[in-house]
Structures are given as C-alpha cells and as structure tokens.
Length: 158
Image (cartoon, rainbow, N blue to C red; front, side):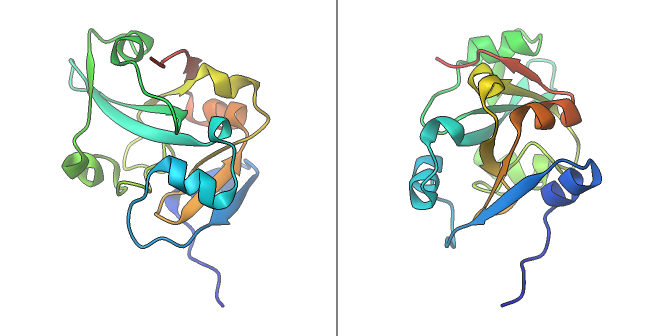
C-alpha cells in the first residue's frame, strides 16, 4: 500500500527539522478527540485538540488544549491580549484555516495565527495533535512546536 501524501503540517515540520511520528486511524468523517485518543491508545492528557477563535479586534487565534478539557474564553482572550474571543463557527473553519473539522492543526494553515498551547504541555516530552487531515495524528515535542510557530504556553482551561 502506498504511503499517504504529506500534509502541509508534515511539510512544515520537515522544513523546520522538527522530528515527528505519524499515527493513522480509520475514519471517514469527524470524530471527537477523546474517541481518536482512545482508538490510538493515546493518553488523554497528551492528546490535544486545536480550537480556532476570533478576537474582538478581528484577529484569529489557535488554542491547543487536552481533548477532554474545555477552553476558558476569558483566560484565552487574556493570553492573546484581547478583550474577548469567541470560537470560530465550524462552517467558517475551512475558509479561515484551510483545514476541516477533525483535521485542524496549528501548523501549515493558510496563515500562521498566534497560537497558545495549554501550559500542561510544557512539561511533556511529546504530545499528539492533528496532522492536518482526518485520520492522521502527529506526535512531537510541544516545546519544539511552540518555538517553531512562535507560540506561547499559558493556562487557558476552565
């Protein structure tokens, strides 16, 4: 069986010499992150989902949090210097990011948005994020990712 084509996220990581491993899973449509983590045997606290929000200023932001947790919109806004942020509606996701729901990742988007990763990832050697399409997860160093995309770590959970 031929190897799947590389995603923009994978090309970005290779260009920036950031080591990663891929994990594929069978899936034809969106499933939540908890289902994905369980299917792959990944710990929930090491499996992160990407949420995209728009600030009061009109700027877009990415927030990475563990799949079994909820984003605190007030803390998220404060972490990016906004008065408030609201999550992007699913119907707008592809137009803004170039990714579909369930395949959204903070790397390789149409435009690199300010990204905040929950502070729990800072102490992890590696974590799992979407690889840029449904059915693909990438395992990599959170610190390497944050450095490459000029993101930050912050407490953004409820």
